[in-house]
Image (tube, rainbow, N blue to C red; front, side, top):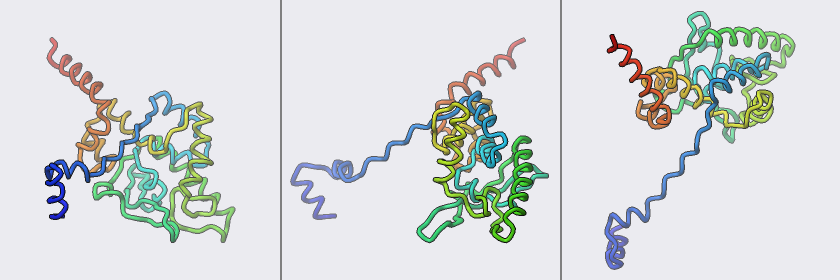
Amino acid sequence: MHRALEQAAQWGLTPRNVAKLVTPPRPARREMATLSPEQARASLEAAEGDRLEALYVLALSTGMRQGELLALRWRDVDLEGGTLQVRATLQRTRDGFQFAEPKTARSRRQVALTKPAVEALRRHRSRQLEERLQMGAAWEDNDLVFANEVGRPIEAGNLIRRSFHPLLDRAGLQHIRFHDLRHTAATLALGKGVHPKIVAEMLGHSQIAVTLDLYSHVTPTMQRQAAEALEAALSR
């Protein structure tokens, strides 16, 4: 390194310039696509009766990551209390499926469920019990909330091709990433005036700054809501 700096000095370069040359550029952040409230409702209407209806209800109402949803186990769901615990994420490795630790320490979290989410999960559990009875000994009991037809983890690629994209087609929507359902949940919550700290906790972000940076496009709407709220409070 010392020799490299000496060589750079001969070329008239300062250490700062050298750092700029050797520091790789940051990868460009992929632009997110979010569904409007009307589009989100259309997607849920298209999911009614679908084998994975509850998966899409949870994705849009909790903002959970795809891997977190596919790793969710029934023992981590409290339907009576209306909450669930995010404890793992499903990953595909060379050795098969792996239930890994969530992305960050904050990603291990409790998530509150909406009433429609609880109802969808109840229907899903009943449907899954019927599948288990039909499969008999062929069913693998992994306690997964969202499993394939024999109880094994769902392949992410199969989920997209066989379920998610057909769902968007039925709803008359353009194809988006599954991860954009997470962005949609956050955008809808912030747009309704939910405090960014609460949204950050719901999403499992390490810091509230991450949430504010990702969803800065919602800030003008929030500022307008704040101005209107203050106007109402101060008006006679």
